[in-house]
Length: 264
Image 1 (spheres, rainbow, N blue to C red):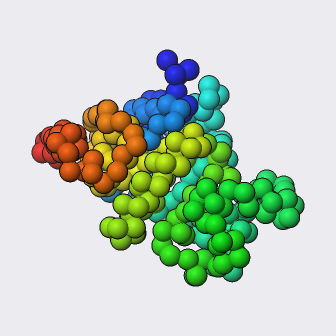
Image 2 (cartoon, helix red, strand yellow):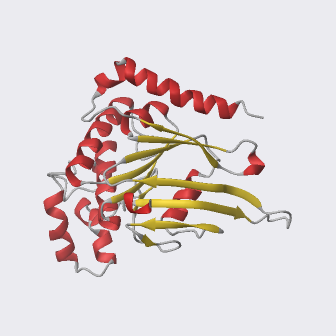
Image 3 (tube, rainbow, N blue to C red):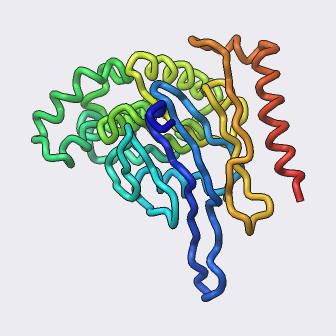
């Protein structure tokens, strides 16, 4: 079963200790998700259900109390540096040029600055950053900053991306452009992406599959309460959002969310 997937997080359980010395808080309750080669899979849910904690476990920043993380058939549980992780903020270093920001992972891995720059330069055009190598982050638009952050993520983690609401701070028009650009980039580079979002439209538009995560009641911890397959072919553009197919997918995902919201 695992061999079918690029990435698997299986039976993940995580507790937070209680600072007051009481019973530990269950944060993730037997969570399992998977990502196939080339897929975009969204994790959809309200704040506080454990989505970011799950991502921190998948990236090796946290260890689960139980469960495993498998990448390309190998157990990477608790081991950082195997997948690319981009948080909501781009976290570009303001005093470094774009070329040095995006090539920073290569330097951290031991490359000399010149070699790291030379490795990054050919990819600037593919990431929509042609002509921006010598600019500083403050000189970039919001969309270009996110492109730079995504390129840096690529050098950190190769073809497996974990993105935590990377487009949420963008205006509606820029976000739409980034969605279409990112789907094209994934197809060109064979990227596999797990994507956290609160936005149902975004999840349906981008994804091959959507996991819904909830914590009802809260003391039972966050868990996967639904999975929905989006069978719409690619490439997709804004016209897809006007179709009955899109509206139908959105309604089905919303029904899962509302069912869990109303659960006792």
